[in-house]
Amino acid sequence: MEEQLKRVWKRWSRSSLVVRIVIGLVAGALLALLVPQWTVVGLLGKVFVGALKAIAPVLVAVLVASSIAQAGDGLGSRFRMVIVLYMATTLMAAFAAVAGSFLFPVPLQLTNDVAVGDGVGSMGAVFENLLLNMVANPVGAVMEANYIGVLFWAVVFGVGLKLVASAQTVTMVQDLARVASQAVRWVIQMAPLGIMGLVFTSVSESGLEIFAVYGRLLALLVGCMLVHVLLFCPLVAFLLLHRNPYPLLFECLRVSGLQAFFTRSSAANIPVNMSLCKRLGIDEDFYSVSIPLGATVNMNGAAITITVMTLAVAHTVGVDVSVGSALLLSVVAALGACGTSGVAGGSLLLIPLACSLFGIGHGVAMQAVAVGFIIGVVQDSVETALNSSSDVFFTAIAEQYELEKHVLPRRNA
Image (cartoon, rainbow, N blue to C red; front, side, top):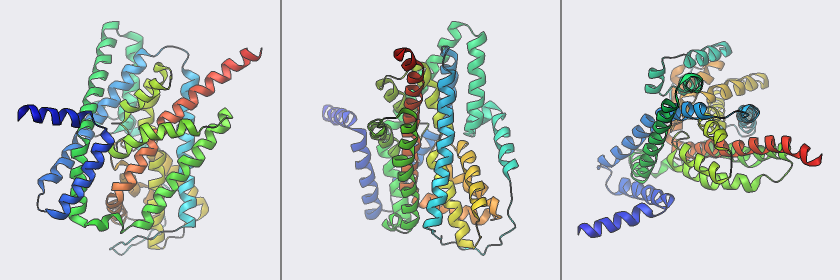
């Protein structure tokens, strides 16, 4: 009996993770329909999400610090390019969400009466929030999943390690990064059980209607994300490289996007992205920093979610949104998205901040957050797939652009 169980476990662990996750998803839905009283199944989902939330900030901290400590010289132009790509496309994503929301306005079902104020032009508050998050206590930043603070202090410690630390200390930090990556891989191996628990909880509480109640809103969100990743991202790449970017894009979506769709965590998908970058032949000194950086600030999908959900609330409560205020919302959404937690549902918590621009109260905004969690089974999965796959895509584009810019003139000469 023991030998049979070992063989079954070995066969299961060697099978495709995607197949195992699909099995877990179907099993969770069936159990919720047949035995909804088995609430212990839902506990598996909470444990899985809790493990991801716990390890992700640690992973980002040690990976960034280790990578900067080991980075060679001559990477500056590539980093500048990839940061520009991350920020510019996040803003483009917000613009795409504004256009989609104006073309196809979707109201929400809100329960409370709304008192709409004059609007809060809180751009200064956004910058203040970002700056204060940057200089937060580093231990507290890790504990609270404050990724802006984690990233800032990881960069500071990484530069410090590079300048003054001994080789043995740098090696120790490198080993810590490997340990954290391995811990994430172990957590991801539990994804089928975790997703079974998450689906069980959603379906047992709301029924299968959870996949249909907010169909129009979900269609708008996913549609904006697909237009952005399949049209705008390749367009940016084509303008830089002047060649067909779709083979690279589809490879990033197939490997990174598909995995991130099920794990729903950009931070937890970092090892997958780094492995793909290595297979694509990208310089390790470059991608070992750009990928953790992208998991923190490259949040195209999050900008779309924040913008669409905020405008849906505004349409619902009767706020007259002008083009100028919509563009301001895009900037706020893009900046806010850069501080989004790299774990499941992180972008939803920025909706109240964006709603405050139109004087919409916190209580009403939190109803939109609740709606976001209802449709998050699909929305957050697509969002994370977009965020994570574009980390690799733009890392590769930045590397190719810088290589061609410096190599081609010498070849022509």
